[in-house]
Length: 395
Image (cartoon, helix red, strand yellow):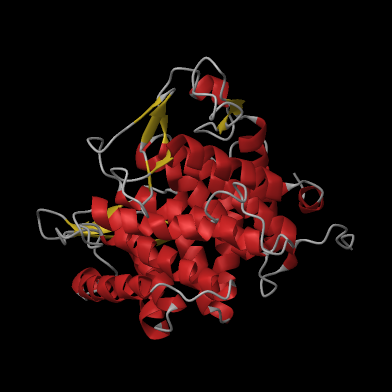
């Protein structure tokens, strides 16, 4: 789908539908406590996973981010007061996101500290965006959110050491430094005015984990048993996203040139053959990966400092992937759910395959994969808002 086509598509309505579907199927109070919200990690027909299910802190952090995306569209929808995504008798997206941050602390044993630095970085980024949403809505941000970031910043400072030449440890084991932790921490530093720290992390990524042959960032480095350095050469879609975000946030000629290189490499290396649909990486944590990349490609598509061709590529990747998720969705039917859920959508875990194939009725559906599609649709709404309906013809 071309950028001009995307401007003619009602991505706002599609993103709202995704938000309504995910919150209805997966969202619930924590132990029925008022003022709380969490996403069940799994849904199967009339049942959702409860507290005994595995705890996925970083899935919830991305759930916060998705709600912030929806909240930003609520502010821009022209209604006075802003029309809520789920109707006037339900919480706004921003209020629901705030309840979710409360639920995360309670479910995480009354703390926001986690064993994984990347998890904490994603929550810090989400609460920062949530506070900016509150400011734009002329509402005071929660002092709680600032306290979250203060606490987590101490964690990041402890994780960014000179071991292995720099970078950020992935976990409290402190035996592995990787892109999944270093990139979102760099982005957090950049967005909170700690530009020197952010640039140092990007410089380490460029020197240690950038694969010049492919134009993409590798997974990480660890000390092998013999005392040498072992590079984990896996390439994941989501790792490219926060690096791109940090490059754009810091700006400058070198960073913007690297951002343009990265966008072009994503198109050539990380798409499904024959089109502009990003590859997806399965279930579990991998179910979030492509949505995260879409979020930051949308920023690139709207960034006028990048070459026009780069912006067009980023826009095409976002809208192509979002369109594939949308066209491949399936409706929740009356035989598999309570009436309140009927008419909602299940999205495929692979954009290039229909949901009827990857998630037929009766199959357990994971929250991560549904957040992924929601992120892609929100990213497409960002692109559509930034791209003119009738862009000038190419020379």
